[in-house]
Image: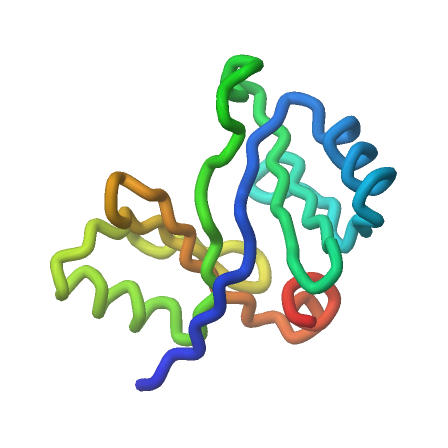
Length: 132
């Protein structure tokens, strides 16, 4: 199976997602294209030009002054098969967590880089939030 693989977003963690959004809306013309709960936590996708940023409002954010970067998000098709291939190749990867309209798994890249692998199977969600 061939997989369509797309670098999708950096994922940042913050305790104050509203202020974070306001800053990027005011100074960088960001547009909120998704604002909803995922696994019980508020998640927002901002679109800035052709790129995206995923914000996660955490109850346990990094201390102020620390980097807020959490992971990169890569959208793939055939997620379960892709995860299986990575696992067989010796890559550390979690099982797929099924979510409404898709699923995700977390893999470990070089130097401990967290990589979210996700698939959006719900066509409306794909068009509205995840695909230009």
